[in-house]
Length: 611
Image: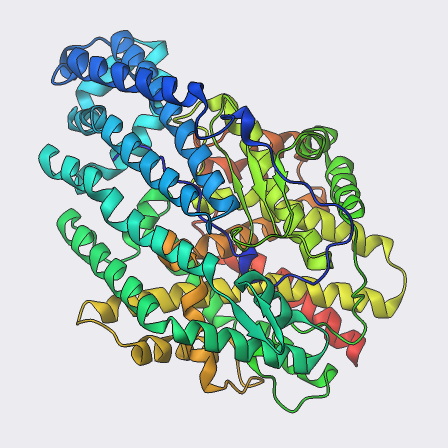
């Protein structure tokens, strides 16, 4: 029930592939702002101090919260926050070391050891969040009334108390907390180490998973087909293991959800995201209803552009005939993204440049490194780090714009402190997707050649379909899988059938799916690390489309300042409060169509140009 010390979920760049060839030297991060290494004396000292302070905290406050004044309770929360931030720093460092090279056995042992140590220390402070939730509303309001210091923590307490109806006894909560290192987190580690160590044969070449998936966007169709065959074969060989991991974690979630009385598999995620089940349902229903006018319509055009009667799954992200596949050097990508950020807001550009001027980004390609991309906020007393695998294509530039948006958001929100700087997943994608849109618009507006503009527009549509349609299909797959798992363990074939069902439904009749695609569910990290995370991408994309529309229309004065305030709020405000200054309301079912209409409008433009 307390703030998680586990790393941010690995992103698969919203389902987008990455291009080949990076062009130029690529940056590698320097983690010494956290710790100099696993043997750094500061690390040992921090752990020892945190353990002593956690024990003292328990002795001072366990069972005594109801009798504390508002100011005394605020002081206790501040002390708790300081301890938690130290533990957060340790786990941020351990997870980033592991992400940098998961093949190194020493990194895996270090990560596991730190998880076990941090879990043991935090077990002394676990009582605090549990006892905070036992305070009666009326008693807590009295404490607020007499303490400005406590009122500052109202958002933290508000979000914590969302889980009151699902909180178990102190003994059970402690058991679940301490067993996490041998439960879900251990299965996550097994998944990560397995993926990092896999080799995929593509033709005569032997690649890691990231490199092989990258080949699915190669211009040569035979190469794409070979990559698809290689990925299918490699994951097929591991199918028994991935099926076991998936079944075990789904059953584990069912057991926990049952004890906590969550009504359905996605409800706990929605609670954590501070969004109502009905809002998520409205989003999902709106996207599914729009499959025909979005993905079905676009991929029918793409098949025609590629001269194919039907698309195979390895054609989904194939470059278009007019698409520029030249290599974009890292320096050019950096300036392209920073120019777009700075043109919108000099402050965004200034913060964004820090990530490049300082060693906060790891974009190099190397064996053992986590595939995909992520932004890790670490802790407010440090700074975020970005991980990418930069291959030098236009989509990689968009990935850079995306992750930099996360990083800038995390920097701006850091002033809220460790307990309130983090945002729900539904809002965490706002700055990232907005940064992508800024970068895309800058590139599109600078392009005058009609064919290249069409290629740019089509590329953006594909990114949006990957972010909205693909992620909602993922969400539907997870929903079907978790519901089916409640009836018994699922075979590889049964899971594959659910995967194919949602792929056919979402991508439409332009595709002819070969049987080997049935195993592709197994490489998606979200299903393992953060179940039901994926709709947050669609939530963020549709939200940003609506938000960017307000910006373009110029109907809100001081838009940039309001936008920066939205980011600086961190987790202190809910989506209704954050969107109100822009005249938007995500709880209105019609809201989602505003965002989907932007995608449909781009497809309309492509159809007109095609005609």
